[in-house]
Length: 154
View 1 (cartoon, rainbow, N blue to C red):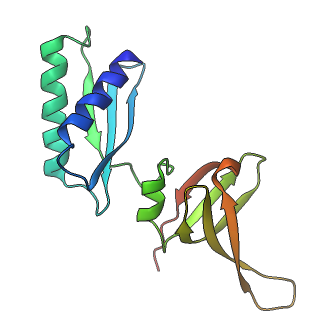
View 2: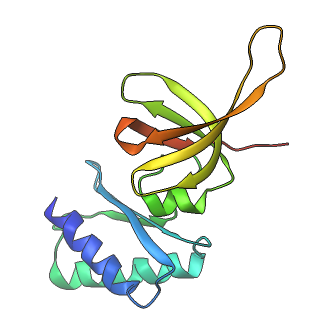
View 3: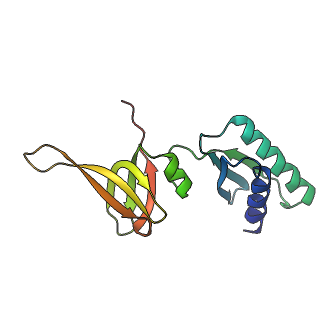
């Protein structure tokens, strides 16, 4: 956990002059793979990932922060990765999301708006023998276990 905190501090240091970029997550896996997920309001470039990787790798080596050999991977969160930050939700307004609730239920809908405490989604509800109707629903963050963006190939 100490390594993850140090890595997070190094990433924040590197992107301090880039307000459009933000740290999503740092994980040190048991197989000595260090994964850093960084994103941007308009995405993140490979060059930015390389610069962050070099900065973090250099300082970790200088400080001998990780005693054993490790792999360092810097990327944006993948398509299948759940959303973790309000900033990621804001980036995905207008897209279709899947929400898993803490009590086990699931919902899918178009993300319309994000506030500090809630999401506003538009879901299509179809009753037997009737046309589907679009219903807007407020979803409190406290009720959400996990949210993922659904990819459409239409």
